[in-house]
Image (tube, rainbow, N blue to C red; front, side, top):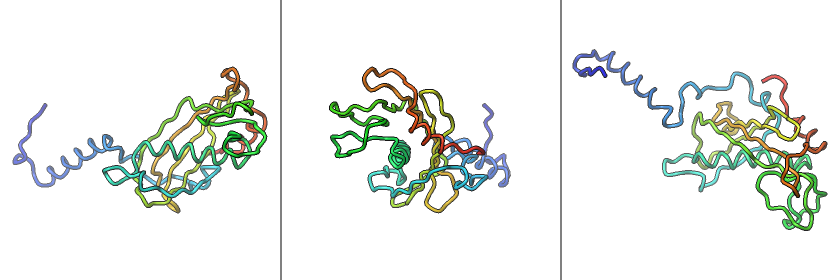
Length: 204
């Protein structure tokens, strides 16, 4: 380690050192400078589905911005909102839905009297934070599909402030579809596969 006394540096040199230290510390705060840039293409073209949400008072943490764990709830919400809109997700009969069961997503409880043929189980989710949001911001959760396999699908999500192209957070979420009675992987149901295919963006 090289010890340099501040008195050995000019004012401009001290400023450069200070900026360098800030950049070194920035990733630890979850605000990587290289990632707090506007998307190179319009986010409306880069994603296939958008859901606008209002942040909640409880989303904020002691630092005055939305806590990192809340973003995973946003991911779950935009994915399931889309699947419901395409009738590719059936809520349990116990919750009052009369839909014909096809598939159920994430960790929803399944009605024993009307089991779905396939259950989408989250096996992996990731999030990278680029810039903060805070209550009472409105946010746009944008969704696309990056890969569809025989029994799995990987979604990609971008979180933006409403009507703003600055990417606040980006992440991925993987569903594996399993037989509800055996918990073994099974092919994605045809109707669900078509709904997922419509989320694929050919050029990103």
